[in-house]
Length: 200
Length: 200
Image 1 (cartoon, rainbow over the protein chains, first blue to last red):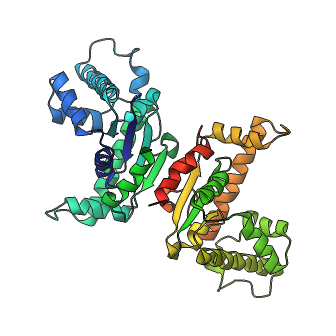
Image 2 (image 1 turned 180 degrees about the vertical axis):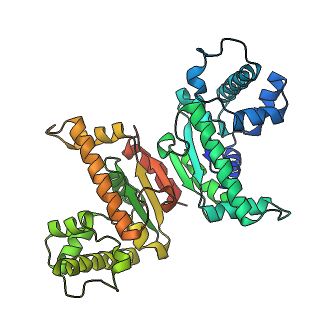
Image 3 (image 1 turned 30 degrees about the vertical axis):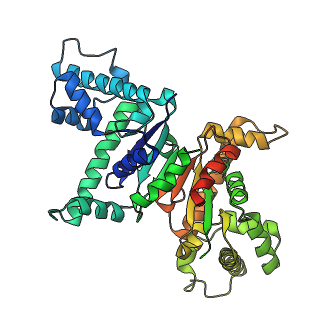
């Protein structure tokens, strides 16, 4: 069976960079936005619309209501969302079956649970997260307060998405094998050390 | 500066075994009950009484009230507890200054914060924790329900102790550099892998 590493992360914790660098260090595939691109291709929806559905508009208790929908008449938005979710599951399973890989976000830890992925959660304190977001905000357009609000909003959405999709609490340590604190850490320097866990 | 690794752990997560084996794998000192023994020696109190004070009877907000105690008259129990706490801090600092080491529990992560210890938190799901406690209960004297209640009680005490002593939330991931899930894992097999993080 392929070695699958899933990375969930708090916004601004450097989790995406962590996942990408880890895949490079291990010489294995890396999937992140590629999943959205592939869903868009297969559903003929725009990437932006797909992203909006999978990140911001999850159907509450989707895994429970699917198969016994309470909608007697066809509901196009509902059907479209289901289709996007199904494609996401299908694509993530395909990717995981192809080769060893690192998958960032998208509830891959839950979708692939039968394959026992190694589940990492990346987090950091708020100061460190604001500072990481600031580095990306090259035009210095946002105040610290605005960045902080943004972080809270995105984490809330991720939490809701994860809960709706999996029925579990996002960030609950029991959903992960290893939780890594990136506060004041250089992801670049950290990854080669963590990568040792996966080499013999 | 010495490399200090602190291990905090949920009861039944195998954290103590984890700490001991990690120190063996790295060939460095290991401190756990030794701290109680040393406090007892220096205060001329019994080990049992010391253990009771440092684990079960912390003074609420101790670090705040000390130095500006509201007790106008001498209070022997209060004074004794302060003495035990002071000795604990002193002994942990001494141990950390001697050589590289692993210290389990006793708020060492907080006491040694100026030395930037590497702070590990070990946890597991309740089923796995019950099962680990069961292994220790060789006479099979307790029911699963009793073990579970015991776990909850000890964790509650540890949480209170940590909160009273540090003003922080025990188990809050931000207090640790790495949180390790030992659910269904063999600590013996896990430690050599984690030990790689500390070797060059």
